[in-house]
Amino acid sequence: MGQPVVLVHGSRTSRTMWRRQVAALEAAGHRPLAIDLPGHGSRRGESFTVDRALHVIDGAVDELGGSALVVGLSLGGYLGIGYAGRHPTKVRGLVAASCSTDPDTWLTDAWLTVARWIGRRGDSGAALNQRMVDLFLQEDAARDVAAGGFALDVMGDMLTGMRATRPLDDLARIPCPVWIVNGRWDHFRAQERTFVRAAPDGRLVVIRDATHLVSLVKPVAFTRVVLEAADEVGRAEA
Image (cartoon, rainbow, N blue to C red):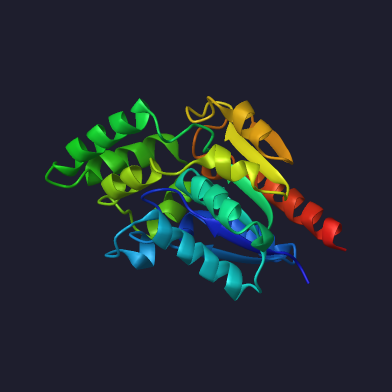
């Protein structure tokens, strides 16, 4: 039987952003489960906290048998690191994408200020969000992202919660293989080598011509990394 794989989405999106990865994993015989985090997708209306998010990830891992390859993008990548740091025996491997910058810096404060300004707009930033989707994503990727709706009111709680996380400390506690994956033009890759060095078995993958939303902008290249990670984890367990 193939590998169980839990996929954790980025902020404001939902599990539908993983449609192409889920299809590819299923075609390869694996068992993917894409989840919605609190405040997102089917969990809209729930307040977001890091502890609640990690609880949702833990429930998905248990649903798949108690251990899994965990794949996360941006917010999902940070949470994947945090989950593996807390539950190292339940994570067979970790693919942490677009999350190679310390979240406890002045940049987070700047993002929080912008998020609060956007939230005061009459549409809570819906028009601006749609312009960004139209500008940076191809039609099929934009359709996948939009299918689960956008969580435009979660940014304040999310950014505040993420400031308290310590991904470098968590990485040091993860014995399984960790793939740090970034797009070549990702503004969150500033500390990627520090993140790789923090993990006992860290590897760096940089995907050419990709931006922050690497799984959506370069889905074939990103999915190849995930499939190779699933295969390597499987071989190690054989």
